[in-house]
Image (spheres, helix red, strand yellow):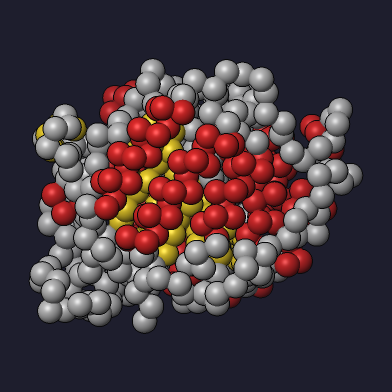
Amino acid sequence: MDIGGNSLPSGADTSKRKVCYFYDPEVGNYYYGQTHPMKPQRMRMTHALLAHYGLLQHMHVLKPNPAREKDLCRFHADDYVSFLRRITPNNQHENLIQLKRFNVGEDCPVFDGLYSFCQTYAGGSIGGAVKLNHGHCDIAVNWAGGLHHAKKCEASGFCYVNDIVLAILELLKFHERVLYVDIDIHHGDGVEEAFYITDRVMTVSFHKFGDYFPGTGDIRDIGFGKGKCYALNVPLDDGIDDESYQSLFKPIMSKVMEVYRPGAVVLQCGADSLSGDRLGCFNISVKGHAECVRFMRSFNVPLLLLGGGGYTIRNVASCWCYETGVALGIEVDDQVPEHEYIEYFGPDYSLHVAPSNMENKNSCEMLDEIRARLLDNLSRLQHAPSVQFQEQPPDTEIPEADEDEDDNKDERKDPDHDVNVDYERECTLGRLKMEVVECEAKDKDSTLPRETVDVPHTEVEQENPQEQPEMDQIPL
């Protein structure tokens, strides 16, 4: 079993990869509300571009099977998932206490089909992880996923279910180490918190930091206990452009891949970091954003690409279409082809977003300091941390149907099919309030997030059994 390093055939970045693409035609029908910035319609627009650029024929297109309640409860609290399942616009006024308790109602509104929406996007991410685990593809894509703010017991930042955590838990059944990279403009707080005390998941988030949602992601927040220095935060200021962004992204991620040697990578491609986003304040082009995908693809490690934020929907669709082409090794034309959403792309009908003339508040000195500090932290890490040989948990059996197949004829979508996802013990999440000393003694303390998650045992051999300490499970 592959436990790290290059797992795909080596070759140039333009070499072809086998790609599985998850898409449910119904996902674009969900509606957060007229004034809400989150528009699931962006997934339908993305799919339409993929179809008219001819990219679908180069991928295995799959309709995700909805995640079940027991799948969601691998990370989320039972009562929270039960609440999501039964809350509707018609009965929400009878559940005001629980709405407040679970942070549902304003940024995270109740809308028709809320639970089905959660099942759909989570099912795609878990299904992508399963495909990667079994070597059915080199890259799995679920643009409906990437909702990185959701916590164990509450919704947050337009996110209800954290499909990323669920997908990573699935990947950990086969891979000793999983790397999570977040290029959304918002800090990937929900994923970082979930894995804050384990070295089996490294989280790296590039985000706007300061007076900006969710307010977390200080460079001093580095993890705790076994996970100390396995959380990396890259705090950025307004107006960062392609060149400045890549001056951090490439050296930092090169060092991460060298030191950590993950068996799989999850890349959250939130498009709100693009120039001109309705809620964003960065100045990154589509090509600059996609360069992160191209760079992570070049390491030839199984890769799960997920969506995330993005609120100027023509830019979101353009970005994820272009990045699907990058995943496939296909360069798509800048001229948007005729299709049902062509009016969104006028008047130039160009796929690419031109950067604006906004001020870049990220000085060279600031960028140099951030880069030097994070590279120094990475140099202090144990190379490729290992875990004790353990029995592998059972696979999550989430079948998928080809998008063009008749669902009614697909026996794999049997509603009575039992998904075996039980662990040896229940995921335990505590609300913790501690302070952690950073790698350098001179640095200030950082606050430990309130929620972490146990990771499953994995059936892998230690790289150096004589040198690695025994560890039955990730301690809390």
